[in-house]
Image (cartoon, rainbow, N blue to C red; front, side, top):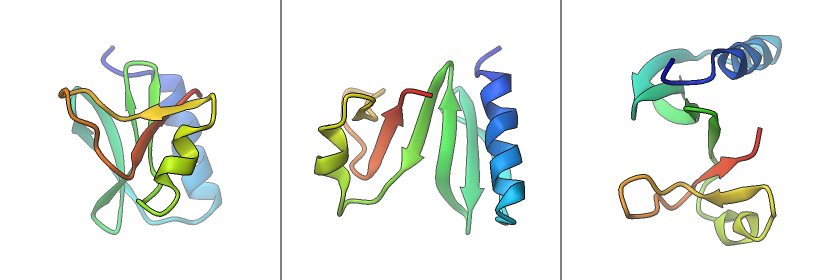
Length: 84
């Protein structure tokens, strides 16, 4: 298992409840949920990735449950890992 399947099911359930048009795509060794052909949410192993944009990025990183998305040695601005 390259990603947490239970977490993937929870995300799918939430997106469907909110009537969000999405599709899932395997990326980064995990599973990403694409909205309007852009990464919105994703799972790599047991980590939840979220696109939050650049405006609130610095503020989000101050939260104890948030950390920068950095798996290549370089942070992806606007994306964070959130403790699920």
